[in-house]
Amino acid sequence: MDSAASGIQEPFDLIRLSLSERVFVKLRGDRELTGVLHAYDGHMNLILSDVEETIMIVDQVEGSANGQNTVNIAKRKIDMLFVRGDGVILVSPPLRT
Image 1: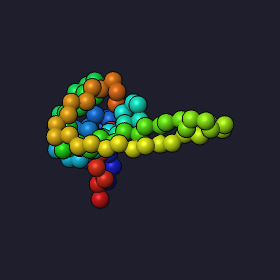
Image 2: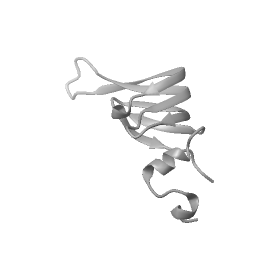
Image 3: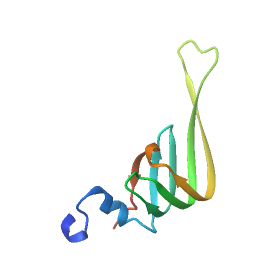
Image 4: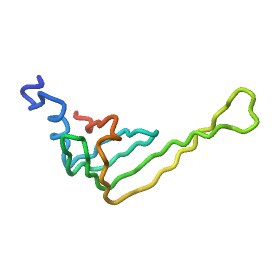
């Protein structure tokens, strides 16, 4: 199936086809979201529901000579979330089989 037949001709078409589906969103600051996409605009502001946020926190180990870091992962669930578009790095639609 070519992209013209599926209705995908520019990047926002892919987002439009992902409305009401679960998407993966990567944000600045080592944050990631998965949630159901309800709305978006040209600035990539997003409204998501049933969101799971994953935050990766990098801590430098004190007293280590070689600058070792530990990575802690924090997760939380959010019923409804507005995501400001200037923090969005990537939006991935669901896998289509």
